[in-house]
Image (cartoon, rainbow, N blue to C red; front, side):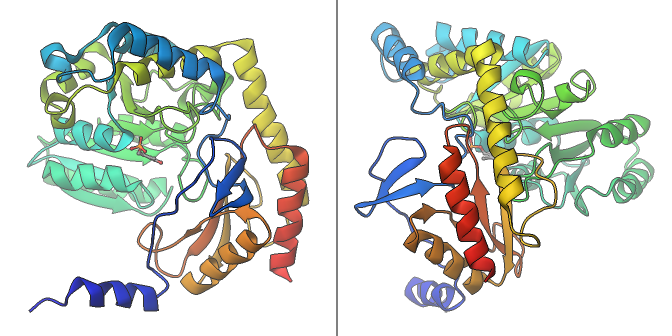
Length: 388
Ligand SMILES: *Cc1c(COP(=O)(O)O)cnc(C)c1O
């Protein structure tokens, strides 16, 4: 007989792997209230500080007044409202793609898209550090799966060679992120594009942590490298730097039409609330503006302040995104460090197995354009304290 859940939970606790929810009592922003205490938040994905912005709230409120709260049906029935259409047009232009399609979450985007593009007899090749949503989507698709070591293009190429030989008729899909969610580093996109073209594979790049952060006006890494037209499937979320909620795919019109017909998480799910689409549209508009670009630059100024103050050894030598992993190794060490920061007034979560591999536990410190230089200096002092 299977062990009772209580015992399983207890085992997790013994291994420092138990997780629990924490109730945050404050507005989005760098100052947060948790358990009645004031903390400086270094854990959110609200990289530009947009989630609490008045102009996003206003966009959502106006849409609620005009369209109500719920979308009342799936997108294919009567759930496609004007804010959805406006957002998709805005996103396609922003990502310099023919068309875009929005989903209720990034997770649903990955599940629906991979399942629509690959099936039995096809091959999906993933970077080892690809996000859980991409792994789950790949598994659910029924395609043959292969994993290449993180960012190792030569290893990817061996898989491509194998796939072309063993599965000559297959659709081959290479899946990676542009900025990796738990490591903050970037994919070698130019090399990936070159190799996937040679094997006539399709490339899906998840820009969840690059949008709003990397490239002109935060258009992402593909645009930064001039590769937007060569990435077949551009994925992203509306829930991180854009400060709202939802996910999207950008690409050719035929890709979007195919997803409308075949992505199950799109077809069989109620459309996202129109107010969220309106708020996301306002967020993209902001990114395109001079004020948006200035905000993104402020994030990079903040990253510079952080980089100059960091103690050596714990963090990557070069910061390539707003995500700064503080590598600790043991699960218990990460928990203890997180507690130390908490006691000193900072909120920085410990990231453990199964989010990252066993023995690679870390703190995941994220920076925002909204942080004040003094807050950043305070957290670097605490990091030096941790080293001691
Ligand atoms: C957060 C994240 C997702 C999921 O997006 P949600 O909108 O939170 O569901 C997908 N991919 C990556 C790389 C992510 O970091």
